[in-house]
Length: 348
Image (cartoon, rainbow, N blue to C red; front, side, top):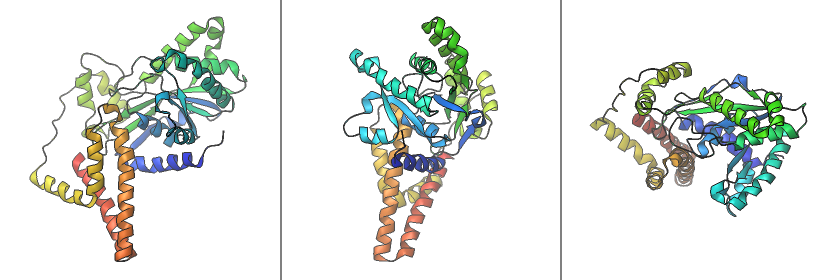
């Protein structure tokens, strides 16, 4: 399957845009990803479609994505297909629809036999919290059934992937993407051929442990909220993954209370908002109507990027038409710089 031009446009556009949206995207363990076989990325799922964008934008090879079937309709399907997305059907979509997964899995088997990359969310659902939720059987089934079907000479690896957001809400928050040790599926084939269910369960258990190793705060517990509020503060963003992981395994400290904005800060933020007021108001209105907070970071990024780019293009064009190209550049440049300055001021 040859990638659509829109896939590459989105991939490289996201690669650039994510660098400005987050206060840094740090990749850890990318050198562990093999380049001699097919890859099955298995990230945790706490940021809706932002999770897929982060993994896809920074992957060396094109990635195809298994995503919930209910987002596919007559309007979205052409776009989702161009982005290498394939529907996966769940029980909540209806028992009869589950049979359609067989055809999707056949497509995945073919892709993996060709050494391609696929992303699937093993948790099967999304959630705003940082810890890993129980894994479904679907990932293990897809992986081992594929390994059994394709040429033994073709290596197939699972890449445990942890996406660690410092915040789903705060502007310019950092995000750490941690890649775990690859899981070679051939190691499970003897047990799988003896008893498929035992093979699925063993792989699911090992994958859960591997994914937990890629998360700063992998498990729920009595002091989970204390640790979450203690660790994920702006003042800790400079720490390494190992240091943050150690904090999660220790006794939580007291989180620092956010500083109240002084009058000067409020005036500066208000002044800098003037240059981008239409997109700011548009994003704010949409965000307030979002009930599922998991979608907050994704909607803010996509809608905010679209509205700001349209706004900057408009004021550049108006400047060129009524004054000249230098004025157009000055207007657009001022709006871009004040947008970034405003975000930085809100963060700190």
